[in-house]
Length: 259
Image 1 (cartoon, rainbow, N blue to C red):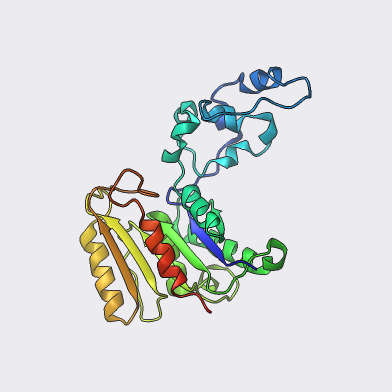
Image 2 (cartoon, rainbow, N blue to C red):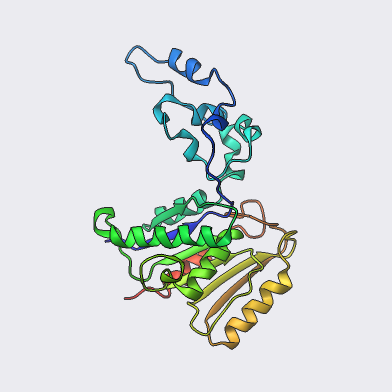
């Protein structure tokens, strides 16, 4: 079975109310009327808006869950060719999938770091329980997260899944922590890949670097990548000096996979 990776999307994910997706009340009607003679609904293109996607009859009942978060109805007017600004977990997961790894993107509850981490612990437990059915391997799995998601990853790396209501499972083989000022660490922390940008307006880079130093002093292997103009939540870093960072992170993980 293939290796698995559980990837935490960077943006906070909130469960949306049923009526929040109806940015355009006529979307369903338009799409239904555009069916071809074979009864197949019109294809969505990258020039269509997000609300056309979430209201598409093919996604009836779950279209609103295609987005990792809900920022109100304004986002639904955005065309799909700009949707990368809403998705930070999925583009990275796609790169990992193309490398042959099984990537899971978690949509978690907001409003409480504890509750969010409990969701992560539950997700990991679910994958372990259903590994055979999902056809994934669980040895040397990795947890990736950015910003708030990275805090959740850090909590699991420190306390394990059982510490947050999950099953008593092995800690991840490595963790990837992107742009967070979270400072927890221990000598039992998994090997850690950390990345941040100097111009991050949310994260104090000095806090990140103190954590790197403390982890290394505790005997934890750390690879640290600092960039200059990628800002906060840079995802794949396309168009910034952070572009390509995911390849370094993948290489770090692969160096810790069992033979």
